[in-house]
Image 1 (cartoon, rainbow, N blue to C red):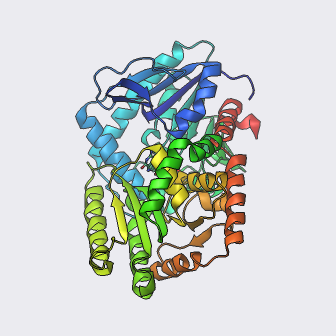
Image 2 (image 1 turned 90 degrees about the horizontal axis):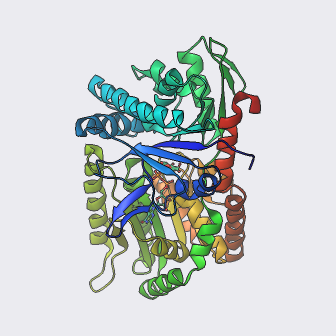
Image 3 (image 1 turned 90 degrees about the vertical axis):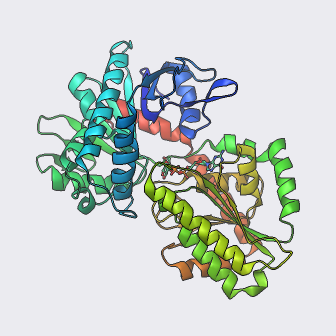
Length: 469
Ligand code: GDG
């Protein structure tokens, strides 16, 4: 890694949580990946404090200062539950829900981004030598622009963790010009895949004809240049491999193997979000059990559904729909005295239990209708590859991960419920040696492009700007 400037990360949330033992660093991938960089160059993390009372400025194991952005409850409702999660999220995920177009939500989004800009500009001004500011995700699309107004010479990188949609969809937003201008104020704008980057370039061409585009370099009317890059996010592959083989994971796995003895285990692990395709997946499972009565009693589908955004109506409705479907399938296919075919866990499980489920699964169902990347797919293949597993990855064509993984997963179109159901069945009959070889190749892809590489690529792009192209 080249010598770096101090780093200021700006994200919707701070990477800490408060438990019985006080404040601790979150175990998220971004935090893990940034730790070595922060330890080396120092820096700060700026984020909304989730209305907590007193977030400390330092937390053990996190090599950076924490700076909280304060937002009123009304602004959080409009900006986070509203514009971010009811306007941008569905629009950027191909209209899987109807985006709300509401000027009050937009006003809150402006107010929140201004609040982030105030704190960030102050922290940046107090940082010596001049820092790189790295802005994360769709909550903060306007922030690079607001920072550029305050700090014209700042080095700013931006990364979008969700898909960037085609121009036809961006064009539906009354604020398309402001949102694109906000992003274009960064020195580099990053996406998971070249498809999302190309959607961004085509959107700029449509909405902002005075911007010149030459390959991945965009030139603003005032001559300033921006680079659009594609760098797939990943996981701490070595860390997951170690977790997979840990004593605690082994102990969890032994319990699960006893519990699910004699059964084919299919697994889904997702935030409970309509983009993840959980309802379509359940329909495919239902068709499989309907078509193959011999599997009943010899098959379990475990769905871990992590509670998410329950302040948003569409998410509450989804929970009801999923729970109704689980009940219906179990009602149809459970024999008296037998275990149910669908195990539904509405909660996050500890990391070791998650790794044990990844090891247990015969077929991992990663079937989102649309997903920026999907880290679950990368975690599953890493855990399986590290333990000489023979699990099969059933992977949607509509997530970022499918581009890197090529033909080694069983690729599916989750909208085609029957086709996916048939692929689920065929996954059970794949040759064992073939399954092992596929998992090993997939594991190697993730080891090669791990999250440390992603951080390095992103920071190089932000620090070098268009000169790096
Ligand atoms: C967004 C984009 C993009 C899940 N269940 C448990 C648990 N998890 C962890 C997984 C994984 C993470 O949550 C989920 O990450 P994903 O990438 O699958 O999905 P999103 O939350 O939608 O993330 C996505 C990502 O940003 C990064 O850019 O890939 O496309 O939508 O790490 O392990 N963790 C624990 N227990 C659980 O039960 N401990």
